[in-house]
Length: 177
Image (cartoon, rainbow, N blue to C red; front, side):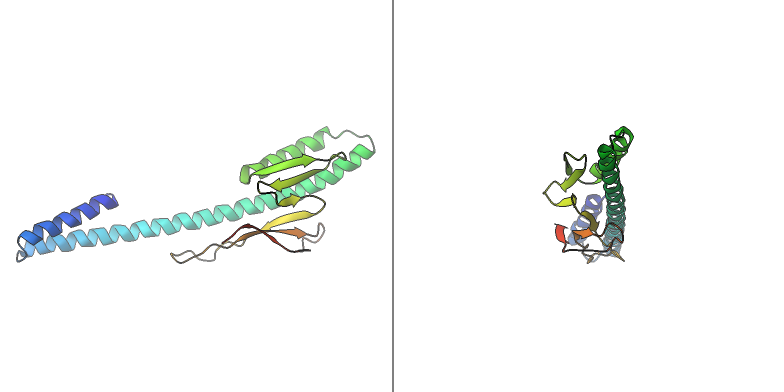
C-alpha cells in the first residue's frame, strides 16, 4: 500500500460519506480509512528515522576510515621520504600509499599532490588540507538519538599532533550541521 493510495482511499470514503452523512457504515468506512492512513504515515515516518540513523552511522564509519587512512598515509610519507634519501626502493611503500589514498577517495572527493621528496599532500575538493606538513583529522560526532527534530552535527577538519592525536590548531568547517 502506498501513501497516495491510502490518501485516495480516505478521500473517496469522505466523498461517499458526503452523499449520505447519516449512514453509520459510511462513517465507519471513513474512520477505518483514516486509521489506515494514520498508521501508514506513522510507519513511513519511522522508516525515515531509521534511514537517517543508518546514514548517520555510515557517515561516522566513513569519517573513522578516512582518519585511519590519513594517519597511515602520513606514516608512509615519512617512510617514502626516508627511503628516497637512502636510495632504497619505494615501490611497495608507494603501492600501500596508493591503496590507502584510494580508500580515502572512495569516501570523500580529494586531490593529491606529490612533492620532490616523495611526500604527498591531500586536499579536499574545496581545497581544505587533510594532509600536508601537518596531519589533520575530520571531526564528526554522530547523533546520540535520531528523531524528527534531530539536526546532525557539523564536520570540521582539525590539525592534530602526529604522536598524541591531540588537536593543535583551529578547525575549519568541512560540512555545516
